[in-house]
Structure formats: structure tokens, C-alpha cells
Length: 452
Image (tube, rainbow, N blue to C red; front, top):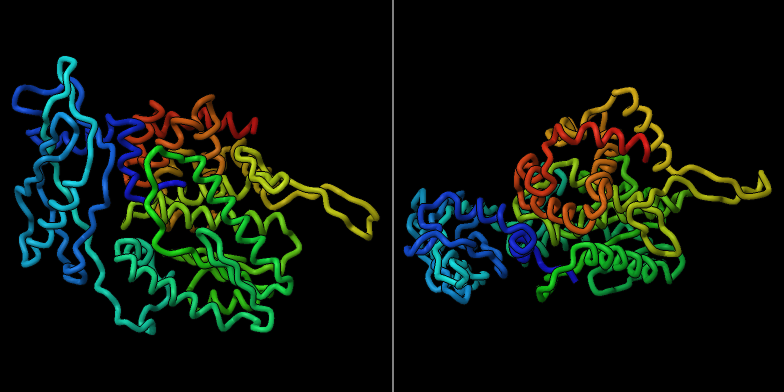
């Protein structure tokens, strides 16, 4: 099982410590012990998430804290010094306590000098995030979850108890739209699936499929550290009729054309009124990947760039499903279907197949954004009038970054994904992991798409 988001920094350090070291220690003058700079700096192995104190919620206070750590020869943090808190406020003691208690639990591989482990010091500035005030105990004032992008960013900075209240609110909106005479529920390790499909076994089947997607993601980003438990399960409502989903969409503010959606902190909804089961399964996988990224990969308070968020979800959602398993790197271009009028089976392209044809033609003609343009695109432009082509390009760019060269899928791509979900600049992450600038991607990406 993949670890809680509190393991993200440990993963970054273990895979490519140079980038983490440059960020954490490069700004301070005390990056080494007094006896001289180490040959190898300390590398973070185990951490716990540094949270904004609950007492400061709603205060608008988000200070920068200058901190210095002493790491001994065994990699233990033996001293945490809070050197300054700017701007100072009445919450200084709460922020100081949060820093000292959290960082004392971190564990490092020690610094080395002349072949021996040595004591070292690290110094950097921590920027706390503003935490929204806790809503009243009721749910009537929560409002639409899709009202603005800031909602998603704020939800995951709240205490887990408050996140659960948001989730309960969404379920309270979804529940009355079910056909109660056919209500079924299935619980799995990480999901609660509720549906009004006539077949009683639908919820169990869906729960197994959703768990399978999470397990595949676990395997893709497996670490050798003990996992933290999930604080609540993801809730999934699957309606038999599209009208039920449409009624829910109108309440939460999701895209009106959606056949399904994901809402933070862990709510998914779909409908089963479709003739194209392949595209429905692809949509479910796509949205489940969004939920997975929010829960395990994304840094709280940070939204990944749209090309990464949508491209990574599309990479999974557009993969071929073979004998109940996703085949990563494959493309779900078409399938055989039976048609009574034709008295036989014929090959029909899925939406993925049509999209791939369109983007190939557009790339050949130079009618689409380059990778460098796509990487720099803001949310307004990405989700604008060319949203379909931007989705397709993002999907293909993620495919290229994972499969463009041998070995990229095992090392480079997982490392890049982590850096970007942590908020590192795209250009810096690409240079560090691939040795390429965004502009360097243009030609090899175009060649990759033409032969894809």
C-alpha cells in the first residue's frame, strides 16, 4: 500500500536527494557542521506532515518560520531551533510548538565526511499556509464544492475531522436522489459504494474494480516504508439513471456535461445509463486517479498544473482493459460489439480512438500547442475552448514522459511526478530528472506522437 501524503518528502529524498537538499539547505549559512562541509549532506528518510495549528484556523496568520536542525551521526534530530517567526502574532507559541514537535520526529541518513558519519546542521524557512476557519457544526453553509479552485486547495489543509464533514455533506446531497427501492451498498478497504442499479451485485463489482485501480497505483509508486492508515473511506454514488446524476451536478456545481465527477476530499459520482461500457469504465478510472492523487500524492494546499492532473488521470483512464486488468501504456482505441442489424460483430472506435486520430493530425499540421506551451498553460487557458485537444495532448505528453525511453517508467517518471505534485517548478524538475528543458521536449514529443 502506498503511504500517506506525509511520506512524499521521504520519497523525494530517497530517489533524488540533490534536488531536495538544494531546496532545504541551500538558503542557510549553517548547512554543515562547524568542522567543515560534509562530503555528503544528510538525506531525509522519514518525516511527518507539518500542519498549521488548529488554533490559528481562520486567523489569516501564515508566518514564515526560520528554523535550524541539528542532525547527529545516527541521523536523529537532536535539536530544533526556531530562530524567527515573521510576522509575529499572538499565535507564535502555537507555530513554534508545531515546528519543534513535528521536526523532532524526522529521521535522516546522516551526513558523511572523509568516509565517516558526522553531525550536521540544516537551516531553512518554512512557509505556513493560511487555514480556513472551521464551519459551524451543521452543513447548510458549506456551499457548492466546485465554486472556485481555492476550495480544493483549502480542504486538504483542514483537520481530518473537518474533511469528513465535507464528505458527509456531499453524501447528504447524493442520498435522496437514489431510488430507495433498489439501494445497495458495498464496503471495501478504501471505498464505500452505493448504487440504485437493479442488480444487487453491482456495488460489489464496482468496489472490487475501484480497489483494483488503487492497487495498481500502489504498485506504480510502491515504497519500503510502513503506511499510515486512511482516516476515512472514499464515498462513491453510482446512479442507474443519468437524471439523478444531473440533479446532483446542479447542486454541487460540477460540469453539466459530465457523466461522472470527483469532488474533494473523497467523493465520486457516476451514472450507468450509457451504451458504451468501455468509455464509462475509462471515466471511472480517470476520476479515481484524481482521488488517489489528492489523497496520496498532492501536497495539501497545492493544485498540480492542469496538464499533469488531467494527463496522468487520462493515461490510466484511456488504457486498455484486458481480462479485468488495466494494461498501462496500451491505448483503448476500439472494441468489437454485436449489432443485430448487421448480424454480427464489428470493430468500433471508442472516444479514445477518435481523439488519438484527431491529435495526430493536429500535431502533423502544427495546429496544437507545443509541450513547452502546454506545461506553462494556466487553468483558464487549459479548460478554455480547446479543452478537448489540451486533454489529449496532456495524455500523450504523460505517455511520452513514461514510455519515451527505456527505463523512464521505473525511475524518471515517478520522480518527476512526485516533484511536480510537491510544487517544484516544471522546468527545474525536468532538468533535474530528465536533463531536458521544456523546449527540448518539442521535437522528440512530435516524433513520438507521429509513430504512436
